[in-house]
Amino acid sequence: MLQTTKFTETLLLEQVHNSGRWLNNPQLTVRVYHDATMAEVISCYRDRQIAPVNDYPNRFMHHPDEKVQVNSFLADWLDYCLRFGHLPMEHAAWSAGEGVD
Image (cartoon, rainbow, N blue to C red; front, side):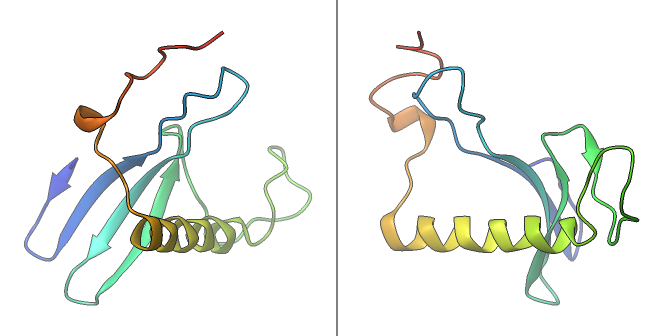
């Protein structure tokens, strides 16, 4: 948890893979609005905020609806965790980076 206020929480969500260096670990900063019962991705990989709409073409080649796509990814990711479970790192059989070639 990065920040807590009366009606919101800001979380860093990351999934750590043990599949080698070529696979990026999803890392999202998510703001949860408890009063509105919703969440939104406010940044990806900690390095940038996501604009609601992007001009296209643009310098970083972001899609015009990138924020919608990233929020959709969050919904799919959370649905997957609810359906199949998740495991906090302290209970994992290996630590992050172990077994990486």
